[in-house]
Image (cartoon, rainbow, N blue to C red; front, side, top):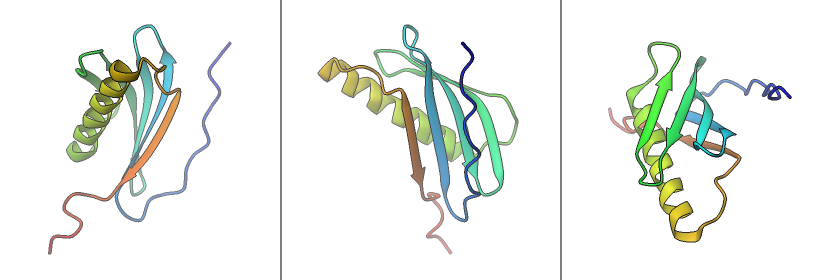
Length: 104
């Protein structure tokens, strides 16, 4: 069975979005997509029970703040999983304002 193709979201006017889709529960590996404006980046994210995240992005130029935020999000998921024993989320979509959006 092949994974179902996800629809393309509307471009963002502000901030960034991360979409995670669990593709391997035994290794806690997510197919990841990052969006900022019209830009889109694809990759994979794996997180251990200790919260250590490994993120691979297929294209260059992904915003560092968006990757760092994804790593922090994965740490929270690992902490919640360890505390409750609940399954890893199959899908997760989050939006965040750019950290420097209020500057200027």
